[in-house]
Amino acid sequence: MEYLKLCCVTPHPPIMVREVGGRDAADVQSSIDAMERLADEVESIGPETIVIMSPHTPIYADAFTVKTAPILSGSLRMFAAPQVSYTTEPDLELVDAIADAAGSRGVRVEKVSGRERDAGELDHGIMVPMYFLGRKRYPMVCLSMSLLDYRDHYQLGIAMRDAVESIARTVVFVASGDMSHRLKPGAPAGFSPSSEEFDRQMVDIMTTAQFAKLFGLDPFTVDQAGECGLRSVFTLAGAMDGHAVESSVLSYEGPFGVGYMVARVVPGEPDPKRGLVSL
Figure (cartoon, rainbow, N blue to C red):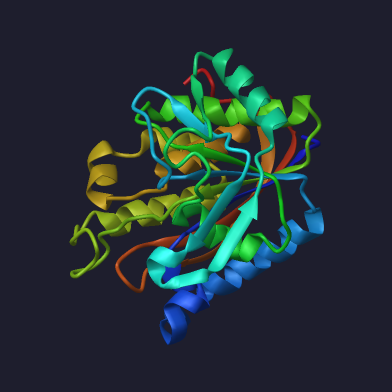
């Protein structure tokens, strides 16, 4: 793979942002340090575009959405930090290429224009990762998740990868999402004893790059976890379909009852043994 240089999993709790979290940001210092390491790597790559999938972008039941407003802009004003902002523009050529490649796989990507609600807004699932990774002003492709099944997310990842390679665009892909929201009593979504097992499995999958195990996750365990990042990870895994990878988890912690994982995946040479599209 020549142009998709790096894929990463990033958490998005606003408390990681020091202007929001203040002293409490120290409770997620491992995540902050890992994000800074990722930011150094992104800066060294110098991508032409960042593609990001956020679970907090408005979703459709039967399609993925992608923002096509002429200006993409957001801030953390909802978290009392309006000074934390990011403004850029969409990479419309790559948007079109992804939509076309996805359509050829039977997956619909709906372009959301500037006339529609939230068409240009960068939600906190984008803003928090870009607080660290956006040291420069990168054009972006902002994808939503969907209520479509996991295989469709995987197929979207393949389409995204193929589109990037077809138009020779140097890209970093960011799978924004938190792991379980139910790690301990008092957690935002309540407590579930299954949630720790879900996070353990996700850390193992990202450490070993055994992405086929995603399809074997127990539905009950997934449901009990109350996660918001699994579909983003499926999309990342699809982008790596049929290729060797170097994968590592840079940090994992859950001090507030929500699991935060920072991981990086570097694509390598084609490896037919790692092709999962027949699943």
